Length: 105
Length: 364
Image (cartoon, rainbow over the protein chains, first blue to last red):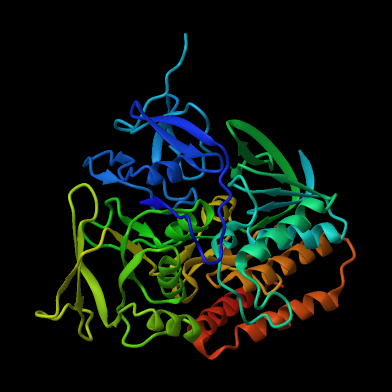
C-alpha cells in the first residue's frame, strides 16, 4: 500500500496536504483523494465489519456501487468513502453495526 | 427542474448521448455520481483500437477528457456532479440526490447510461480486505495514484484481467499469477497478452483460486488446475504469497433504476445477465426511456460511446427535433463493424437473442 511516484504514462499532480483522523489517529492525504484512497495510502485495509457475522470488509468496487466501504464520517454513518472527497479535519470511523443517525431535539 | 432530456451517467455512453441530444437542440441535464465526468474511462491508460479513424490509438483517459470538455462547453447541457438518480416518483419526477439535497427533475425523455458492476467471486473468504474488483484496483492506481497492495493474483484472464496485469507491473507492483478457468484465452487481445508474457508474468489457463487464507486480510491464495467439470485436480495446488486478489470475472449491467421505472429486463448471460429489452435505436419497452452503454449489455467503451450517440439522437428525434438520419445509420454501421471481430462470437449470440426479443415486442 503506497503512493505511486513514478509511472510511465501518468503523472500524479497531488493537491495540498490534508490532515484527517481515522479512529482518532492523525493521518495525511492529498486534495483530490477520496476518503478511501487516503485510507488505503495510509495502510488501512479494514474499513468496517459486516453487520451479522462481524467479518472484516475493505473497499470492493471503488466507484460507489457495492457499499463495502461504508464508514462513519463526521458522525454520519453509511458514507460511501470511495466516492466522497477527503476534506481537512474529517473524522473517519468504522461503523458499529448498522450505524445510527443522531437527531437534535 | 424541467428538461427535454435527462441523461443518467457521465461515462462514454452518457456523455455522447448528452452531446448528440444537445446538438439537435434539446435541453439536457446530465447527472453523474462521481465528482468528475468520464465514467470508467478515467482509469483506462491503454490505447483503444478498433474504431479506426475515431479514437483508435487514443488512451481512454484522453477520450474522457475530450468528451467531458465537449459536454461542459455545450450551452444546452447542465451537468450535475456528485449527484445520483435515486428513482422515478409517481408524479413523473426523477429524484436526484446531490450532497444531501433532493432535486426533482421532470424530463420528457430519459437516457439511462449508468454502466455496470463487477461480479464477485463466490468462494469462502472472498469478502475480506485484499480481495478487490479489478476495476477498483485500476481506479485506485490510475485516478488516485495509490497501490492497494504489493503482491497480486489476478483471477480471470479476459481483457480487463490481462490489461490489469501489465498496468500493475507499470505501477511497480508484483503480479504472481493470472489464472483463468478456460483452456484457452477468449476475450483478451493478443497485444496485451504478449505484453504480460514479455514481462514474465505467469498465465495459468484451466486454473482457479481454491483457497484464500487470512484472518483480517488476504495473506495467501492457493490456485489449482481444474478438470473438464471445473473441479480442482488433487496434487496441482500452488500456494502463492500474495496480499491482493483482483477479481476480473465479468461485469453485470446496473439495472436497478430501469427495473424501478418499469423497463422490461430479460436474462441474457452473454450480455452480462439481466439486460433491458431494447431496439437498435436504444428504445426500451417503456416509452420515453432509452438505454446506452454497459447498462444495456456488457461491451466496451467504444461501443458504449456509439450507443450513446444513437440514444441521444433518437431521443431528440422523438422530441420532434431535426436530426440527421444518416448519422444514426453511420453509427449503427460502425457498431456492426466493431461487433464483427472474431473474438466476439458469444456477444453476437447474445445480441441476436436481444434483437429477437425486441422484435417480438414490436420495438422500433
